[in-house]
Image (tube, rainbow, N blue to C red):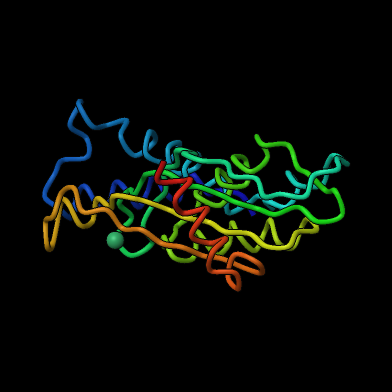
Length: 187
Ligand SMILES: [Zn+2]
């Protein structure tokens, strides 16, 4: 099933009414349709399998890890439907000479971030997608993000950055290697 835009339009119209707006006011009459198109875009990752971006790999003799740093992402917190955004850093250690195109790591991040998300789960999903798609000795995903639900409402703490680390295999077991990658990312 893809996104039901007319259902979103109806819902947004109801929200506008519920908060005391006039949904027929000229300035916002097209807002429900705009929001529906926006949600179709920002939640498009629900209807995509991120693994499809990792089906092709290159065979290259390389026995060290690879770090792709500063992949900018935007996602929507599933608790408040407010954005959270920041940077994803991914390390993976190829095994049996299976090396993936670097842009594919960014594509996997795009698919997984375009869903109602939690930062913690997002890191795990990115890591597991890579770990389950290519042969590797381990994968590590570090996410740094600012959550608008911490800024606009509730505790109201702009600038607070949430950092999460998810690691598998060698990056979980070998603490020196894990530290080396973290130092590299901090660079
Ligand atoms: Zn939230």
